[in-house]
Image 1 (tube, one colour):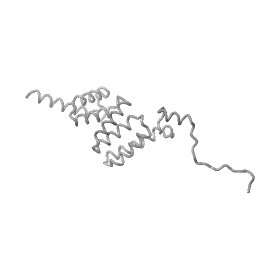
Image 2 (cartoon, helix red, strand yellow):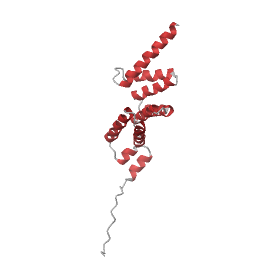
Image 3 (cartoon, helix red, strand yellow):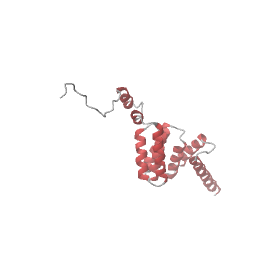
Image 4 (cartoon, rainbow, N blue to C red):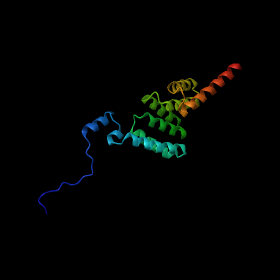
Length: 167
């Protein structure tokens, strides 16, 4: 036996106390705490979006719930989770996530349009109109597909109002 003792090798990551404190205080996200780059999170979100588009809703749900947990201050991840909930028929959860996305970024046009559609589903036309008008304010050239969809909804509502007023 050797007289000198060897230190056991450890695979445990040493975490600075300051980083832990910042995480607890909400100053950094769990993803930032773990050193996961934003680009990597968005690559994962792209895969989740593809799953959503191809009808793999439960897989998309797992991805977007994980992204919201990893980066809870990212409006885009909340918006994608909201869309997934809507596709699953979980409308109350969807509206709550769209609202959270808008609390983080009032200019999130996709969240405005998504929430407006839920308001229309509930026949809450004034709230839907407000979200649609705000979306059109942020994307007046209608560069996003969701804004184009909102414009169509607005035109249909106007047509319905015109027809009702002529009766």
